[in-house]
Image (cartoon, rainbow, N blue to C red; front, side):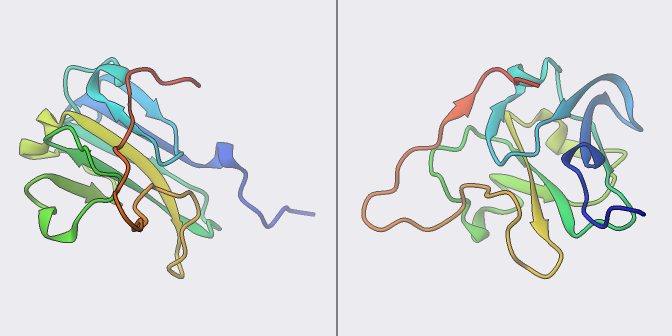
Length: 137
């Protein structure tokens, strides 16, 4: 009897320092936290590889930031200038390889969030975003 639920270990996002999935690599935690480039141990993020089971109920995504984000939410108009996101294998991130920060998260294919990515609107003053300098596996 097969299990119809995906286990967290069935999902994996690996970032590479070289294009075409070459060079040093780092497996990102899929937890919605924002990590500095230093935390990955890489000099840059030149390619991204996604792995999920065929029966996956959620989709994976990575956001790359070319500046260190200070707000907890990412504004739509800033996409393409302050941040960019990826949901498919990307052999070459182009100019985004020089990103300063990275976030990995999952969302349900039907639209709901599976792993919260801290992008919810807040009432009143928005708290600042924590940038982590280490990845605990």
